[in-house]
Length: 271
Image (cartoon, rainbow, N blue to C red; front, side, top):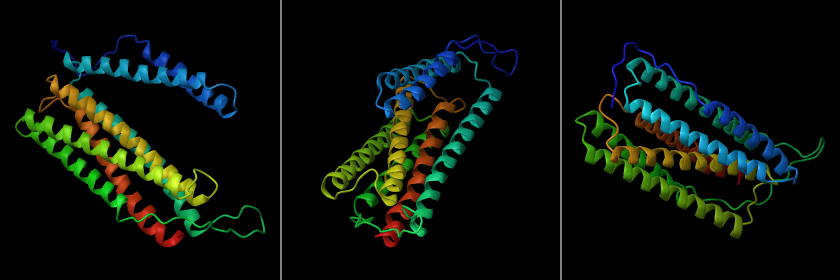
């Protein structure tokens, strides 16, 4: 039950989750270093599980806070600013990889001073087959999210909200499946490798991290679907869904840049 607020701000009670999250994050980082040096993978996985559990438990508390009325209009503005800053940091992350891709495509780097860069023979991925299908899937998924958002804001249409979210999730899962199939074909049947050449490295870092973001976004939308089925979200109170929609549109836009830069322009320049 919501309680009456006498001020615009949410005064947080003491919480264990920042401490648990910090310890888990440190274990994740230190464990990754240990694993890379072939010492042990268990510290990494313990930190990974700890981070996931912290995220789940902390966000459950945030949802509960919203249900009892702690998310006032001022608090919701702060939450939106936080999501915007997070997405901005993600933009900078992908900007770095696009920079690397364009730099090595236009000015390939030699292995040693005085040597000449020799580009290996690379199987050309046809941009207008599977990558184009994935582009259509993501764009349609973005349209479904927009439809669900419109249904909620204009009329509180719960049926269309749930249908739009379910459709967007299904299309996101299909995208991930097709990308996994593409990776399988390139690695097993066309002699691509995760390293060894600048083109391979940039291709897999860009498409792989984008695919990872698609998985995160799909989970984000799935959580929103579960909450919608439970009766959460109203025309005025739906910051969680808004954040998921913004993140999903960000994933869409990154893929459009990636499709035209890597699959279309990259094939013409590198192959």
